[in-house]
Image (cartoon, rainbow, N blue to C red):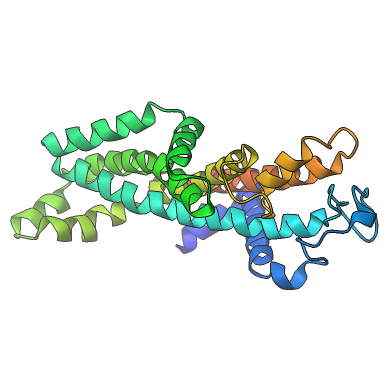
Length: 278
């Protein structure tokens, strides 16, 4: 872990992305105490006010402080990312390990199910699931989790296929160790590196999916300070008040970019072939 952390820190872009994500996490946890204004409070006297000393990012059409709403929006994005990606990681890893380890008909059935899910574009599949379940934050997280489960399943299956015939797996089988014990003690730990990288990349996709679905009106409720909701509300006002769309868009861009470059850095740091390279 020390060597991995050292290699990761040497990648400046990835480390900067990690610091920004840490900052977003801190803001999301303590948003209630650090926001300068109530993100739900309306003030008709300061409607569509441009950025100034009182409102750093300006106000929206209802006079709500955009800076405060962006800070609160970080809570929604991280909550969706953590729960949706956690859902995908848990079920996708189980499906992939079981399919790769046992093979045969079990592998064929599970692989065909993931292939069917892969046949749909991500946003289209999420839209179908949201149309069935109905718009809500919980259903949004379930939809995103289902969409990205096949990705983790395929990654886990590929990692298991690379180590399934290893000598230590054969030795464990010859000693009478149960399949569940082998998968838990030997297969999963040796498949964890690519899954960790995919977690960071899926976080970025989850943030984009939440923003896109909220923008289309299938995400959180309209009064919730979500980055996607803020963009949806700003589309009718951005010609006369550019700040209503620019700042939420910058927040989404920086968050997604940070997760992507951190994922690239983790992939390089966890690659054993790069261990002895300068």
